[in-house]
Amino acid sequence: MKSRLFTPGPTPVPEETLLELAKPVTYHRSAEAKAILAELTDGLKYVFQTTQPVYTLTCSGTGGMEAVVSSTLAAGEKAILCTAGRWGERWRGILKAFGVNIVAVEVPYGQAVTPEMLHQALAAHPDAKVVFSTLSETSTGVGHDIEAFGRIVATTDALLAVDAISGLGAMECRMDAWKLDLVVSGSQKALMLPPGLAYVAVSEKAWQKIDATPVRNFYFDLRRYRKSLAENDTPFTPANTLIKAQRASLQRIRAEGLENLWARHHRLAAACRAGVEAMGLKIFAQRPNNALTVIQVPPGLDGTATLKRLEKQYGYKLADGQDTLKGQIWRLSHMGYVDSFDVLGALAALELVLLESGMNLEPGAGVAAFQKALAAAR
Ligand SMILES: *Cc1c(COP(=O)(O)O)cnc(C)c1O
Image (cartoon, rainbow, N blue to C red; front, side, top):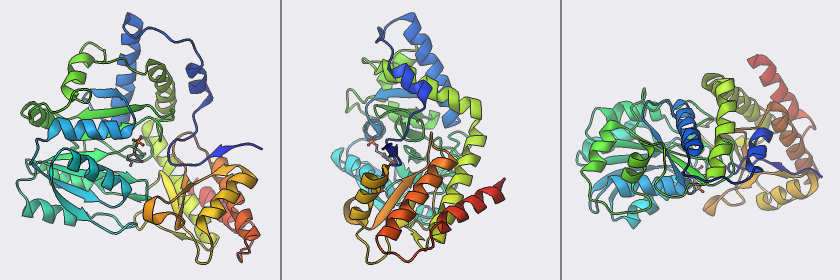
């Protein structure tokens, strides 16, 4: 049986990128390594839609988030945290660890923080230094209106930090045009690489704050990455094999064109939602994003056991809910190296296990709705 990965990180990796990973290891302080890092940085600037350099850190996405918090804020300073799920809570955990004074703007899982809520929080806390937000809340499938957040925060002295780890490369996000100050991404979501690299971009406004903040980190001190990248280098030994492979996946993104890629994810996500709803299931997110589809487990069904059956019988690996959502939702990723027929297969397999579980369902209902939606979008 074939294994098929539909988890919202890690995601499938294109063949030409996998081949890069199979090549012999090379030394990381060479002219060639510098040229490769320069090319990677250029590709990342395109994906982030920024003229600022994008720093490559060898760590998972959370390391990039920690670099942002620990480089930007002194202990006791105030930050506004917009949280709509587990990844908003990840920001909270890091902020707590660094002694930041947190003002939380919180909504129940499945909902999105609105620009109006953020506006009110900023008005009530003009001393807040940074606003923390999440582009694609991968734990619930919600997408935030980061463009509107950027408009609001830009009129204040505060900075806007965005966890774009699962959203970047799957949905529209323009760092410069939207006035985002700190943007973090990771390699194993829509950027089509195995886990291991985090990417951080910093605006001029954010650098002013960072340069005025006492140093309280070492490996994650963004100043070190700025200094090294000016020479197309990294402060510590980078995962250079991954860097070479990321270059290959970024070439794929460039060849498609970012706007085509956003449009493709949009079509795929809309068709997937149509398919799910035609199966009689509900979408969990009130403001769904295009990176993944999050499905509510129908009443009376064991969500966790159903996913296990889907994997064991048909090879399709979807993700369960996390923490309090375990068994309550199914998360189907369609970001990165995933096409229509991959998702079509996943919907067909899901229909099969639901039929076998005794759910009242017309075989092919979801598949037909998916095809209709795709055909209509052409
Ligand atoms: C996956 C993910 C993370 C965490 O990344 P790690 O690589 O596991 O550290 C953070 N935020 C979002 C939105 C994610 O999807």
